[in-house]
Amino acid sequence: MIQAGTYSAVRHYLRAVQKAGTKDTNETVAAMRALPVEDATMSSGARLRADGRLMRDFYSFRVKRPNESRSEWDLYEGMVTIPASEAVVPAEESACPLMKEK
Image 1: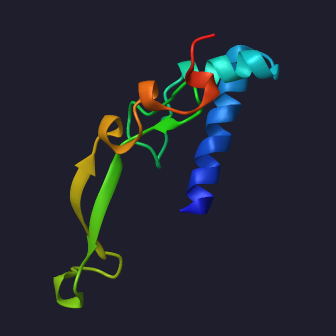
Image 2 (image 1 turned 60 degrees about the horizontal axis):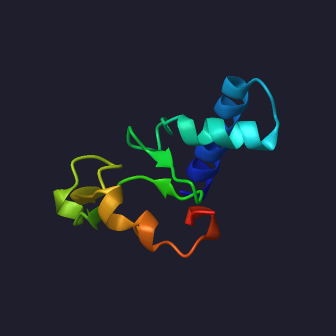
């Protein structure tokens, strides 16, 4: 999971640098917030919020019993998807100073 998350973050950063046409921090961060995070680890529509929080759905899985698995890697059963809007602290309740109006 850590390797996949790191891959996703670096890939998104590199896409933002390409879109911005520069490695300037402000322009790259703006491009990162504008681009959806789309890769094998993220559901479509994942985005960075102003405080840097990745807004993505969360998932709950159940580990299958051995007799429920149909192949070697058939280990989990998806139970529920929790929408990003319900899984994280709402922007208006965030304690992050980046989310406060100046």
